[in-house]
Length: 205
Image 1 (spheres, rainbow, N blue to C red):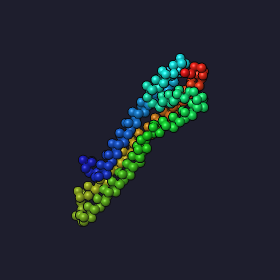
Image 2: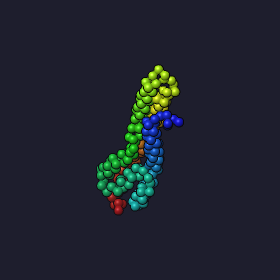
Image 3: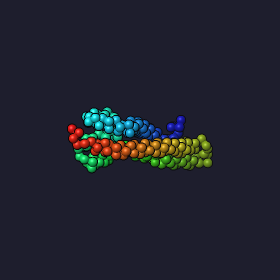
Image 4: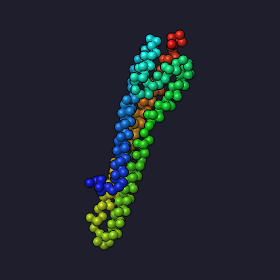
């Protein structure tokens, strides 16, 4: 009933709300897989490296999902370049990983911004329809003649706000998850830099 009374804009709002839900769920699952216990992971890699088993350390990184594991692998593969070389490799890897984490967040933010505007557009179109019906009916206008435009105006505005509010909340939540993962990456980068540069040169294969 609400969809039929909301007019064309209501269908547009329905589509963008479905897109927003899909983006949120995809990013939520992505961040859930990406965020690991970086301290435990680094300690495990450190133990393996101290046993001089570089191949196993790389295998552990490859078997672990997320940007932290990829940064650690980069540091291990760059270990022969010295401390500054490893630092540069980590910085370059970080510049690649952060955009991956932020991917699609702009789409969610855009939906949160345009949903109220689309609702407002639907409201304006509803009132235009209302006034058109009022003018056509002349002195014989009654509520039944005007109800269609009024329904469209109110439903579209309500739907726009109902979409925008959870989108804003979801966007801010996902941004907080990204920030937490980035902090883990920075800490892991510092830790693995110390690990790989403390290995004596004669132990490097």
